[in-house]
Length: 267
Image (cartoon, rainbow, N blue to C red):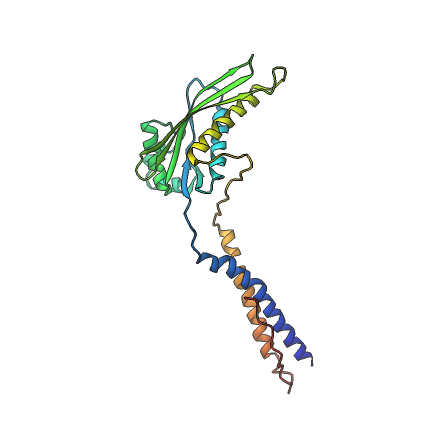
């Protein structure tokens, strides 16, 4: 009698594991992979912006870089890669061609030399487009509490190194009222955001919204690779329990066969 109970329990546990693990796994994984993905987002490499000699506040350039990365990543049409010398593709390039080490450092100006240098690097990253640009001017009127940031961005086809779009904008930030006490950097940040919004809107052709969330790009790593074995491991466990349950009555003498059939999994 105990053997029958154990056999039934093993069968039910096995079917439960199969239903709970394999069905969702097939729906979200193997079956989903067979479905058409639609239009592939374009890979865009954002190179560090240059700045004119008159622009003394490097924080403005850093903030605009960050804004452009987040703004473009919010658009489903693009997968954004922020350029850094630590990218694996760049490290491999330097390892194979040490003479190019001097060419990988930013910033990258939006002139012919800067575009050519960025194009060679973007090619190693299988990019569709890349962006180079410069903060041309920054002014702040203390009395009026007005900051302005002027920037030029070149959108370039990574395959041909031809300029697709030239964008020149001026962002403006003002303090909320004439009597308000606001630090210059806070007003400058508003000017950066204004310039960034204009650039993102011209590139994407869409209205920029503050509530947009950057697109998350899944990264395959060794850790995630190990996790992919978990469903298979549990499936093996379920199969073992099922087979063990079916053959578990051999040592218990003559036992009435269990004729109960476990329920079919909800496929």
